[in-house]
Length: 165
Image 1 (cartoon, rainbow, N blue to C red):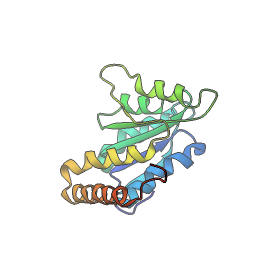
Image 2 (cartoon, rainbow, N blue to C red; image 1 turned 90 degrees about the vertical axis):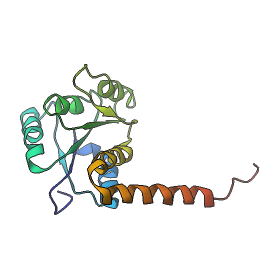
Image 3 (cartoon, rainbow, N blue to C red; image 1 turned 180 degrees about the vertical axis):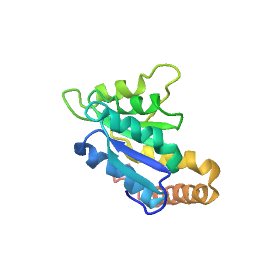
Image 4 (cartoon, rainbow, N blue to C red; image 1 turned 90 degrees about the horizontal axis):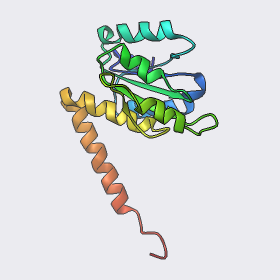
């Protein structure tokens, strides 16, 4: 559990090996003060526990689920098949195909089972998207997101141009 408040976002990863990438989502949610929890749940190795988590998530206050997995990357699809909560898939680069297999497995969902998919290893953007979804009904979070965008805009404008241009 990453927050003492009731979690609004569930961050799932298919393996502890995915933590290096998925911690970026947790770090971003912490920066935005979004209560969340982080768990390892596998579509293949712990399917019953994965489905149980998903089915109880809404009743515990979870409003968005981020699911990151590599290779076959069925986690986000299994999650989306068992809930009507928004699901954001994070394909993780691993194995012989460097994340392309995970990207295709995550993005190619059948009609009626949507998974919003970010870039390979895009856990940070998954957290921003989750926050933007939550901000539809949370004015304080919406304000934090606007402030962060303004901070990023200012930072890029203050950076000096590369030498030779």
